[in-house]
Image: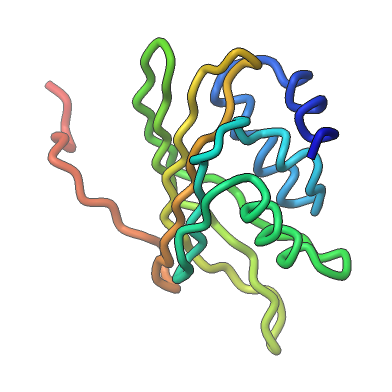
Amino acid sequence: MRNSKLQAASLEGDADDVEAAFYDALQRGDIEKLMACWADEDDIFCIHPGGPRVVGATAIRATFEAMFGDGGRVRAWPERVRKIVSVASAVHTLVERVEVLTAGGPTNAWVIATNVYQRTAQGWRMVAHHASPGTTSEIQEVSDAPSVLH
């Protein structure tokens, strides 16, 4: 665990940079870089699609290590990101396009995710990742924003 804390101290930038590092680490299957994105807090949590709430760095690390088992990677790209940013926190809601290997070859699946970031003494860090399964087709968004600007 100490190694992750040291690597976390080297991350700089804002919540967008941490998010980019998180998805890059997912695609590379790099557990150390992925865990460096997380805050050093007891109550950080992660919810994978259809899974339970996983609390704490050790438990979160174990879930990603299981995903990365035998050199595996998670091919996920953030798309359609919406952000709420304040001085010390940021909430990103997004659609993740996930490449899934099937018997017929690779196909895309969709996941709706919320990533929460806080500004800590070490810089911006993830404190929550909550992902829910989408549908096999592109996710439609419902919004009360007008479709035409006047």
